[in-house]
Structure formats: C-alpha cells, structure tokens
Length: 180
Image (cartoon, rainbow, N blue to C red; front, side, top):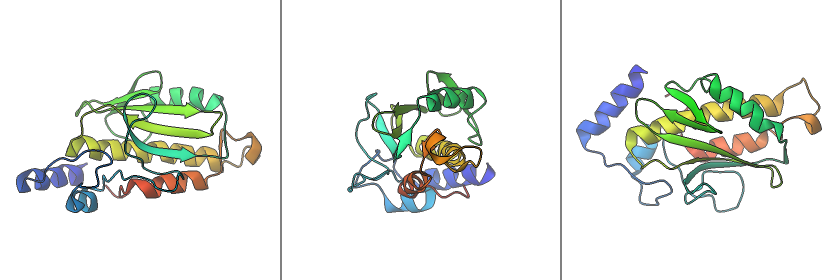
C-alpha cells in the first residue's frame, strides 16, 4: 500500500497526465511504471480491449474460456460481497458491480455463457490512480478465476470456467505488475 501511494505521489509531482483506456497515445512511462496499460487486443483472443462493453463502459479485459457455467455469476456475487479478494478498498455494490471507495472507480463484470466470455468493464472516467486501482482489482478477479479454472475438486468439463490458459492470456494483456 505504501509503495502504491509513493508511486502515485511521484507521478503527481512529475505532472504525468492521466490517459484513456485503450488509447494508443497512452504515456509509455505511465504504462511501464504504474502498470496500468489497457491496450487493444488485435487477434480476438482474451486480452485487454479498449472501447465499449455491453454495459457501455471501457473494457479492461476479456477472458475467452472454452466454457463458462451460469453459476459462475452466483459465485462471483459472493466473492464481491466478501470483499473482492486481495483488492484493497473494493466492495461489491450491486449485481456483479464493485466500487473502489477511496477513488470512486466503478467496475462491472459481464458474463456471456453462450460465448464463454467474462469481461471486466469500467464506466469511470480515466485517471492515473483510478486506473491503477482498477488494474489491481482486475488482478484479484483473475486470481479468483484462475483458482476456479485450475481446481482439482472438479473435472475440467464441470468447472465454472475452463481452461486456465484464458486467465493467463487476459492477465498478460493487462500490463499490471503483480508486485504493486
């Protein structure tokens, strides 16, 4: 937490501008050091995609699984009610929605069972600190999905989402460093 605050302070003092999701003009310095680059995926595979999701928000990442079970949405509702894993300051606010209390950043999870996809989107205005927190929330959600996709308690066909490689591809697209 202290590292995040120090990083934020350094960027604010240096006058690094905020950027928009999916912008190709995003500052490389911000992406490299804050780890919040949400770029466009060009091959249609799971990845960070700029632009609008079904909810009208910017797509943070899309994980394309071989299959997604309808009950994944129920499990994620409980995950949100329980405090969103390791994502500090995030709390569930509604139907698959969460808000980061200190920054006001909003995020929504969209599940398409037919297409086997899970999207994380945000309608919040882009900001350096908000994007950093959104990236950390995305990592916590991907950690949860990874655990579900890799569980030994169920056969692959019975898991809520599968295969785990979809999570790895989505995580790579974020550009958020895990140590933040």
